[in-house]
Length: 230
Ligand code: DX5
Ligand code: ZN
Image 1 (cartoon, rainbow, N blue to C red):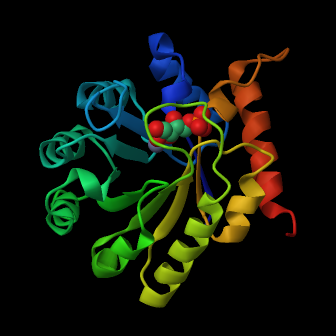
Image 2 (cartoon, rainbow, N blue to C red; image 1 turned 180 degrees about the horizontal axis):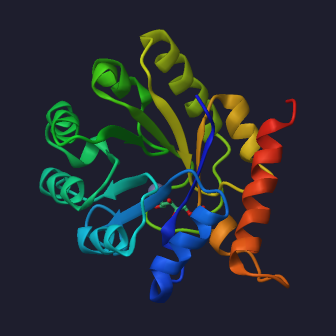
């Protein structure tokens, strides 16, 4: 699977969100990671389907990877697929019937993702693996950007990689939380192919050029790490 770098809009400047998304896409982002928080499943509040619809109207055509940190999930699956999500992921603890919720995402024409918290066993994946297109391993506890990477999540990535390979499915393996230039290669070595980065990209200090130049330099440094022999 081609490695994807997916900047998380959580770290973007929301007053200039359309421009921020245009800039990271121009800088080489493969997808936009769209973090949705409800102040119920996680103790923070972010943005809803209206904002995704506005980005589409603004002209964003890049794949949008919606990460639902909400409970319950089904109504928002419908709202976000309607608003233009390409991938919708949710936490199995937040759905009474995760298999049904995964099916609902696919029925609505999007790719279906399942998210594993640091405290959630990957064993949950096995009975659901045929219903998923993406597995997302959280390398922080969900709810906030800018947290420190939890090193033991690499073992979880490795276990997910083994389960995906055993299934033979065409499934992306994404890692989210605390990903930077200096640890992205470790995540890749553990088996991840899709890398979310919020503060590492949008938080890069301004250089002499444009924001596109700033973002491009981080994304390029990440790609160089991914290309370097382990
Ligand atoms: C955490 C979110 C992450 C996070 C990534 O709840 O799901 O996507 O914002 O941000 P950084 O890269 O800053 O950890
Ligand atoms: Zn996320």
